[in-house]
Structure formats: C-alpha cells, structure tokens
Length: 172
Image (cartoon, rainbow, N blue to C red):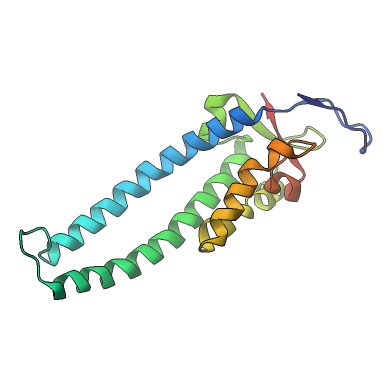
C-alpha cells in the first residue's frame, strides 16, 4: 500500500506496512517482554510460596492468605514497573532507530508523515497509548485492542498512537 499526500503538501509516497507485519513485530516484542517479566514474576511467586511453606503437601490456610497478600502488592508494583519499562523501550527504540527489535525482524519502521525519521517528540506521543493500555484495569485491554486493530479500518492505516504522533509504519 502507498500513501501519497493529498491533504499535506510535498508529502512523499510512503510504502505503508501491511497490518500482518505490524502484528508480527508486536508479537515478537511481546514475546521478548513476556519472557523477561514472566521469568521475574515466576521467580518471585515461587520464592514467596516456598517462604510461606506452600510448596509442601499440606499448606495451612493462614500461609496461603499471607502469600496472596504479599504477592498482590508485589505484582501491582511489578505491573506498573513493567508498563513503564515497556513504554520507555518503545520511546527509545522508535526515537533512536525508528524501529523496535520486532520491527527490525519484520522489516518495518516508524516515520513521521513527511517521511523523516521518528524523533523523540513523535515517539513520546506515539507511546502515550501504552501506559493507558497497561495501566488502566479492564479498559486498558480495550484500548490495546483498539490501538492494535485500528490500522485495519483506518483510511491511512494508522494506529491510535500513529494518529497522536503523526507517524506511519512503513516498509524499510
């Protein structure tokens, strides 16, 4: 797909990435973070369960309740940290290279509407969607889904983050 700038003067023709490549890049980035954060989370959960004596055959109810209380607070903070780290990853990678590891593998990159490289301001605006998606219970999942699927029906094939930032995802 190509976009020729009809509404904006002197906009170059950009070869817009198909949604399948965007999804592939997202899946790769997601897998990276799921492996990293999943390992930390599993380690913390197993350590806490062992400390409370819950890895034995007959754990008592009080130990189960203590573990749940301890882990609830930990995973709340852990979720906030994970959201901030992933948001920072997207901002830094898009501003510095125009692409994340997933986008590198899938052969796509983020550019501004005029075809110039994504800068820090555009990368920051584009990433506003991520803390909303990761940090707002229940509604965040809806925001993430809308952002991910928006390019499928958008006339310019932009996600909500792209619209906020004035960016496109293009083939490199």
